[in-house]
Length: 148
Image (tube, rainbow, N blue to C red; front, side, top):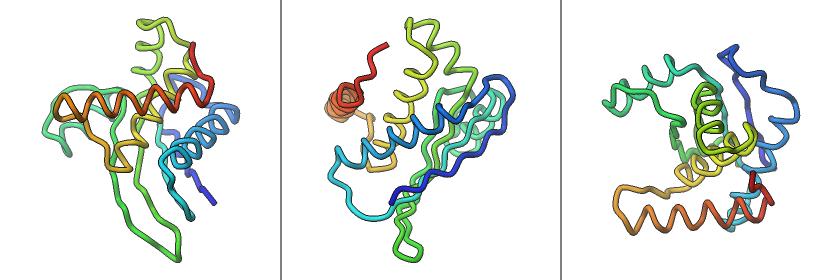
């Protein structure tokens, strides 16, 4: 079982039930792709640029907006593995979708894949890690048949 908890703390982008279902499917696809088995919980929050900048400053000492933040927990409660929190800036989703010529949903789901990989231990601090993470992102997006 995979439980995705949603928290919408912004009013810039309407988050629909279809968006939430697509995110749930994406979380499930990442876990399956990584061979993860068991019961999992992930929280996904939608925030403004202002809030994500504050979180980035407080937790990473980076005083700027970003598109997504990942807060791994790797905890367990009653047999459920709590992977952690994904925080998405809806303003960045809109901006980057436009810049890259993607749909809003494609950008949202790509950032979810990216963040889920962080929750599962991937990073991109050096070139090899970055290459490996980018390859996994592309493979998962292809599995999900999300291209535009």
